Length: 363
Image (cartoon, rainbow, N blue to C red; front, top):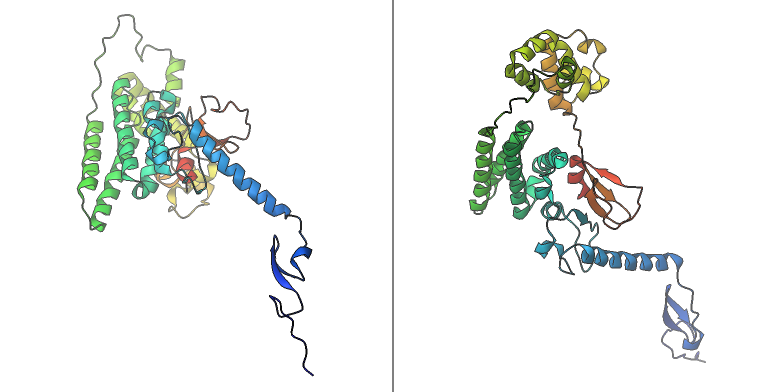
């Protein structure tokens, strides 16, 4: 006697079939008896989060001036912004914000008019050139050159040459990196060579800055005529030996003060820039630390100058900025600290973005 044959979509049993449900495929005896399982909580949260993020990115692009739905990389009217909406994740409609895009769209050029932001922007350019130059687009590299050119104009206009050496170092790194890159690539070098030529022209301008001639008023007080207390404060505010030497050459009276109190001022400069543990490492190579305390005791002025020079290469100089950038994680907005939140939100958890942080922020 033969066993009966059951006709169904699945040979495992009579009348059963595979049904697709929220939790996957399952076997059911009939279509009418399919059990509808409730939606998974995590799945619902993920869908809602994706929807909110998508809508928020659209809102960021609309609120940025001049964008109106166009991709950020093609929105020319959205440049020179005092704040920048940051898109940190790639979506189906829009890409994420890159370092080059931030350099182009933020108002770094016009912000050079503000003395409080000047040093911040110069250091930002330095870190971009030093760490990310070859990964930037041609448009972003030209923007760095434009910022450098504008900075030179402001130095000459204000007769503030304190940042000249720093900018010269940045341009040297710029030329060196592009020259090495030109040797590696095998395509046309015309655009790269033009950037190198432009940076060399900026170096020449930087070296030959002209001090504007200003007619001195009869009753105007000279630096030497200031009270001794103010002169001492000026000397104590100097942060590099070069500044000390320049001031000594500017006036014989200051030259005498520097010659007598040189050791005190040099020690004050070292104390200003570095902590105790860092100061002891000046005789050690860059990769070593934890030197004995005796290495920084009873140093002569020449040794203090050497200590300052070596520590500057090893640990860098301390930088104080009057104005910095802030980032709001909640609204994903980057803006200057001297302005209000672009969306008028009282947000307390704001992140401080220093020049070195700005470069790593878009990684």
